Amino acid sequence: MTLDQLRALGFDRSHTVCESTVLVVDCSQCKAVTVQGHPIHERGCPNETHECAECGAPVSKRQRLCPDCGECL
Image (tube, rainbow, N blue to C red):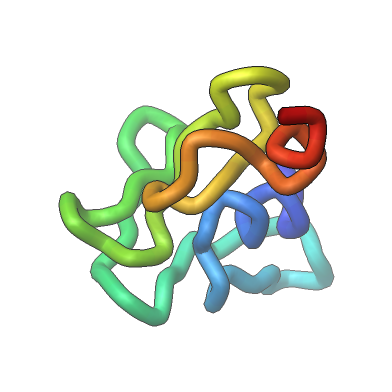
C-alpha cells in the first residue's frame, strides 16, 4: 500500500519514516490501527471510506457512488 492509497482511504495523517520505507497509518479523527497488514479506522470515524457501488473507488461512508459514477445517473 502506498501513502496516496492510505490518504484516499481517509488516513489523512499517515506519513513515512526512515527515508520513505516505513508507512505510519494515522487518522486525525480516530485511533487508526493496522490489523494483519490492513489499516482500519475506529467504528464511526467520519474519515472512514468504503468502495463505490459502481466502480469500487474509495468514497466517503456517507456516499454510495463516487463523483464520476454519480454523474452518469
